[in-house]
Length: 450
Image 1 (cartoon, helix red, strand yellow):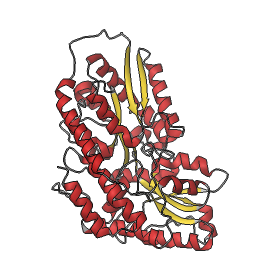
Image 2 (spheres, helix red, strand yellow):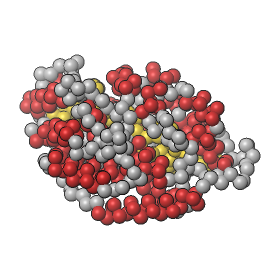
Image 3 (tube, one colour):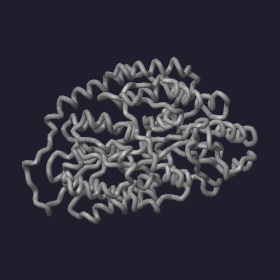
Image 4 (cartoon, one colour):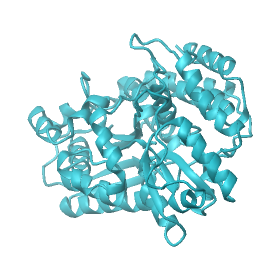
């Protein structure tokens, strides 16, 4: 869901892989290289066609590539309502949505660009925006909208949101903030009570998280905790949030890859310890979510965008509560966000104009009120702040201090994320791999991409 960013919890988790399976990347890396070469070669041919002016009242059909559309949870229902409401308000613009699994969104978009038939609007997860902006013919949103209309629309956003996303300071703003959520701790208040814990005092540090998980495991028949750093949507938002909170970063301020630095080792070693100690099951996210939904897991650390889906599953079984991401010792928690931005790829003038109207509508005040109240994501516009579920109050407050999502340098930044998640995070967290050696090897691969 952000991309965040599991298929059941958030729109960027459509694929579930078993963590016990070993993944090889040799063929994948070569495949990405071929796609990148093909895309780069065709960029010139994908320029904007403005030679065929169309009357303002002519009907227009645009395509929308989305990994939220088509889901059967509140996210899918919410996006469908937004699309329908837009078409009601704009009867001469028809939107044809195309559903795609989250982990495949960038690859699908690249292949359609190569084929010469790209969607007019695409929903792209933040972990993939950097690569998309460098390798695909994404339109400048400001140029499509016109400076005055652009400035008027952007004025309604929470300022910290613009500072934390690729829109801020970009010479070519190509991604409109759409769905964003920070990681939180969902917990079963009934299991807390049964384990002798106070539901009104959730864990505030990683040490307390382990202690609470141990109490749940010892005094109930449930598992303790699951920290979903192994993200099936191929996003590293939670990995970054853990590393940030441990005082580090995956990329230094000078642009160097620091995947094998001490804070990264500390962060992943801490989560690995949960597994080694037995309070965290060594399973994939789908299995952990299923256990939580059935009352057999005390705490689930994942995107706050999962609130409505988890709440629906918990009704009649247990009381669901929410707490902020725990901190590391005396350091402040510094979560980044999962989620996505909306981009315009439309080639001709009429479609581009219609695409902007669509993006503008999907990110206006009323749409964000629906996103916050019915889809469980953050209210990114000031006017929508009161619409968020009260249980996500801590996440809404954290918007003031959002940590920008960090992208690996180069045109294969998303492939770097896949390497990090598959070659390092999964084997360390779930399979007991040596953190230092594993991260060193992953860092070398990521540095070798460029």
